[in-house]
Length: 363
Image (cartoon, rainbow, N blue to C red; front, side, top):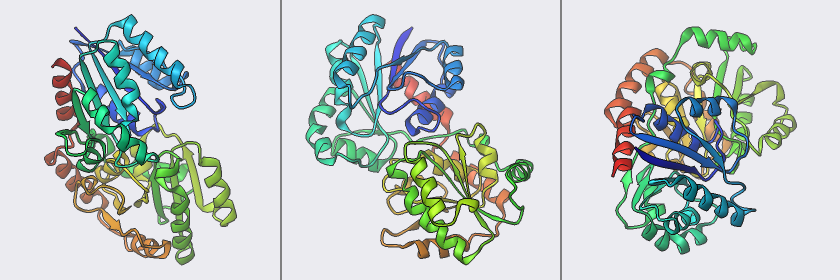
């Protein structure tokens, strides 16, 4: 049996993109010949995630704060690897700063070191480019969620694109859940609901999203913004909603247990990110049959169905509003069926990709 350590370099939480991607693969993977453990930065993980890992025979280990306590972080990782004698380390990160984990794994003698990149840029571009040669040299397998991410992370080196796949059927549009969700929050059935799912932090660009919705709401008062997720900037966005006079027109859902009912309640999915790798939330929205409007910063590979509308970088909030308001009426159930067929045909089936990761683990 091979022993695998999956490292999430961001927090291990349900609203984290890296966590979601790897948990999707974990759920779909044949684990009979694998012992898989997870390690990340947070001491306490949500009960649901903890129970799922323990039920699957997996452990979770806290390495501490990666930025502020890097020395103790490395010491914990070193001790964990030495103690449990892992055969494979699978590092999920957004840049070449994951050299930290790769060097530790190399020193500990792990022969299979997988670098898996989930973003197409970051806050520390110069540092990333400086570290990239050694980062690539120490990796035995280079994985990226998209071509754009791979080129950002690995330059001209060979890498494997592993699409952020999903269980599409789990996001199928459900008319009954749509009605129930709207009734629960007092949303009229005819109201145009604009939605977004994502962590409240800089790359997701919630600040501009509120400007867009403000422009939408001025044109059509019978509209509402539904925000699912949590994060460090949530309070700031809540304050801005109050300043713009939108407090009664914006619903902050926090973390949701049932993504399908949340997506079913929406009419248009808006994704104005500043940068992305391959955003899982946008793929899930397409699986639900939603009309989607995204920023040009989002990789074209995320447009799996060919139906996502991309807004140019120079487009202002008014331009976004006009585009969104065109998408009030359409055959939602029909688009859901067609989109799910396209997702399967174009390599976004989670079972297939989970098998590819399993093959890499087995060497």
